[in-house]
Image (cartoon, rainbow, N blue to C red; front, side, top):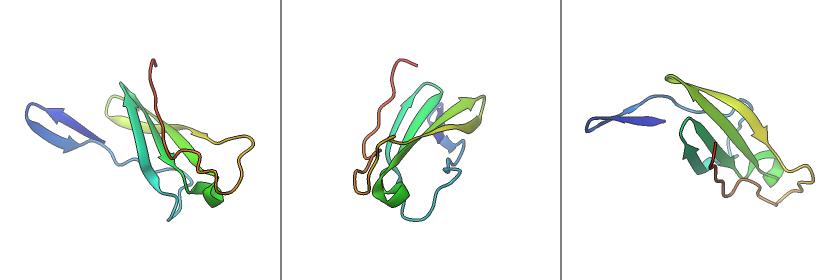
Length: 87
């Protein structure tokens, strides 16, 4: 995550899924609203897909949840697109 201070952008954190593996495509889609970020990983779990929820407290980002479809099947690509609003 990057934050802007004046005209300069600096890296505040590097978000990584707690259970992520190479090939998940974590970060394919990202949506941020205030202190909440949702990050898609459409190839996670044999392309069933997942979306990860992170929240910020001060300058610290913490994974809060991993969202998956309860009836997900291989190739469905849940998380290929994500959006968060109204938090």
